[in-house]
Length: 115
Image (tube, rainbow, N blue to C red):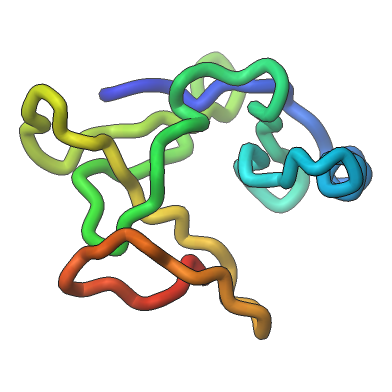
């Protein structure tokens, strides 16, 4: 285990409203992490360092949803030993959409987009 992705637990309808508000404020919505169909963790204003972990198409970590005392949590686990000063990354696995988000990870196996 590397770190838990923490933030405010919200429902989809609230996430949609916040996403729009964040975009209007110029914040963006990159710190909204879906747990399941109805639950999102919003780390935008009250998250930890996990929100700053970048995407990679060839990551050294992965995100996993676990249940602790009936509460779902997102935990980042390492795939391999991670060296000092090595960037921690995981595949965001964004859903496939028509509008592509460019990927700049630089991996040899880069897909070219986050979705």
